[in-house]
Length: 603
Image 1 (cartoon, helix red, strand yellow):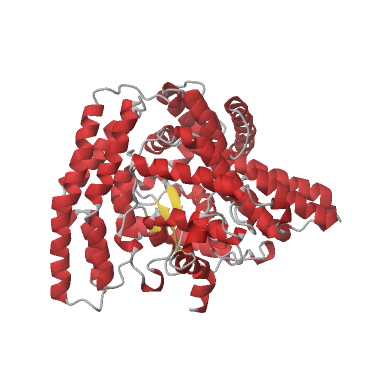
Image 2 (cartoon, helix red, strand yellow):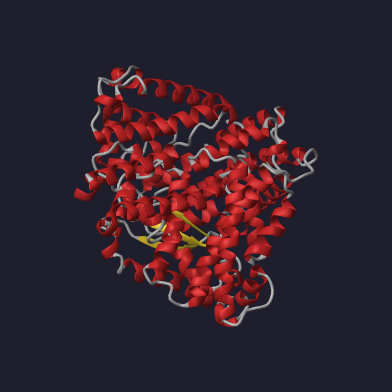
């Protein structure tokens, strides 16, 4: 319980405050304390996002209010939230920043950047594709219920059914937003419509008892001690009825809309093809990279990095006897060698997951000299759910719960074991788990004496930049001595450099989807299925893929600056403490934090 209150106490306090008699001051007027204001921002946001509350703290103190609800995603509510953001930015800037202590000033700067960028982006609220094959609401909501909704008691089962009954309302609101986008000419690429239709049709083609929403619950409900076997059976009958009577009809209405849309979209263009698409992409780049770099500048950085990394890879490949062909072609040949592959069998799949866990455990035991703080929360390796495999990336990380009740999870895509070559495994594990995403996110969640938004607020370039930096760091620390493991690392870094080229190519330079796909495969040697999933992800989520390389380059720049200025006084452990010690940051704020630390060290 001590750990629980240390980590979650801030959130619980906010919720209690929200119900207190002085809610009028905190909820509607400028709070007399900026700390109350910081917490108010998070509370008001959380009240609109019950799924977020469930993800962070499953039924805190037994309260299941949020666990029975789904967020309101209607256009009207989105407009209200945008007005709320504008108002909160104005309130934040009414405080005297100069009068705050350094910790509160840092919180001020982080929140100011986040709110200001959001206000700039209000014009582009409808410039996204809520239903898409990569991470659309048609798959993310079922995945959330199956994976994160807690099932620890009969009450949780009741909450689960309450949420299932809300699928109709939820997806009707999504449908309302889709129609509004379509009226404004904001239509997704053709592949988005075609592949999402396939997903949705397959989702409702199953008998309710075979659907992930049923199967996941059926497995968990067996472990409940406060439900008899008869009660469990009755609950599952009710769930099947809700799936058939509420969930499937809701999907049917989405399918009907997309079937009509399919007759009007014929191309797979970047966002340049949308109304004012170039302006939108400029904002998306700023939002995802927290920088002021222009698309052309980023494209050139990508081309230069591709050339540099290819030269390093060529030297390694030649040394290992692979001298003929492009870098991509040689990596393809190498990846097909039996010694680097797992047998595509249940045993091979399990061995792959076990080996990933061994890699993580190995590096976790050796990082003491390089990191002062270590996350208390553990990380597990799991396979990507089967219904998400086709369009999911090769791996991704899902944060654990703030109270430690659910560990972080590194999901590995096992759709084709031929896509997992052993030289790339270490790099992927370091990126997604330790010392990458799990390290950074779990440490942020465990920060003490900060507003709770700093425990959970993500900035793409920082988070992905740290994860890519972690790949290089592991090599620097000697965890990839095998030249083929190092080739896997360089291939992954080359992949992120290629992203700078193809993302800006498709969205700013009007490259076709096929042109980008050919470039990605030629440069990286990535398989067709994985490369296609990546290119389509960039089309769905413009600018996001830029954060990895640009964030890494910034962290390396700051590290070199620290080495140059501190000389013999430079300590890698201390540098990591500074970079990770404040939670996720916009890159300009991270620069300011490191600059301040250097001044103090020298002073």
